[in-house]
Length: 126
Image 1: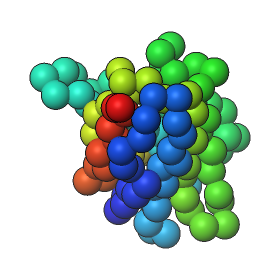
Image 2: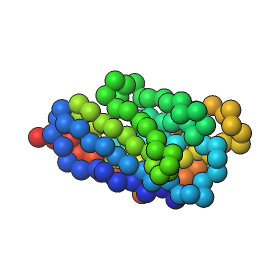
Image 3: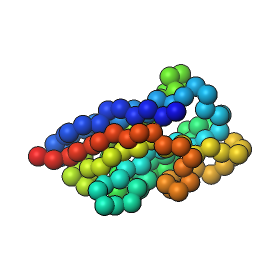
């Protein structure tokens, strides 16, 4: 189970931090990430992190502004979003891809996700 929180309304240039609580029953090997979907658009990958070594991947539009991190003790994934712009507006989803082995490659593709959270709205506007 994935439960997101932390969305809201913020002005351009502002910051938000999203949280994704991961169920304790999740298998050991997985990639987990944040995806977003604007109205009328496809769901796109924002950032992902590997459960094994903490390796990360970012979408081109958020590099240098967003940071994904994990708190292993609390089974929580975070997305720190800085210098937000109106184009960052959308529903942000936490998604997990279960891996068959520990050295599986970390992806950032919505069609590879096995399970989604319910989503949290982020709106960047004056």
